[in-house]
Each structure stands twice: as C-alpha cells, then as structure tokens.
Amino acid sequence: MIVIIPFWMHDRLEEEKVGERESFCPTCDRPVTFSVVRMRRKRMLFSVINVSTRDLGTFLVCPSCGGTYPARE
Image (cartoon, rainbow, N blue to C red; front, side, top):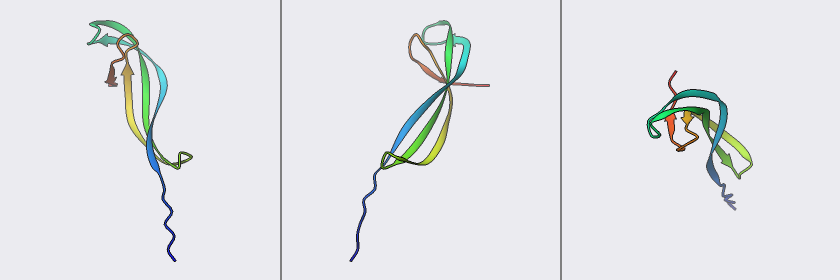
C-alpha cells in the first residue's frame, strides 16, 4: 500500500527595516529620507516550517510615493 502525503509550500516575502538614508527620489523629484529595507524570500512548508531563505537584497523605499529602488553602496 502506498500512502501519498500532499505537502503545501508557499513563498513569503519578509521585510526588515535596517535604517534610513537621505537621497533624491526620481518619482517625487525632490530629496527625501528613504527607509532602507532588506528583503528576503522565505519558503514555508505547511505554513509552519521554514524550509529556506533567499536574500533578495537591500532596497530604498520612498515614504511619499512608495517607490522602491535598489540600494547602492
């Protein structure tokens, strides 16, 4: 007898604020204080077990327009 156990996996994005940076927003066309956010993708099994984490990078998020831009060192 073969028993098949289905498993459900889904990805979830996790954002972590790591600081702030003063820069120019091209969408707002003015200088603003961006939130510096590190994004990770977590793969979850049964919505409980963390299977893997992939670092997607660090981004700048504008508080005025909500635009997201890759952070450059």
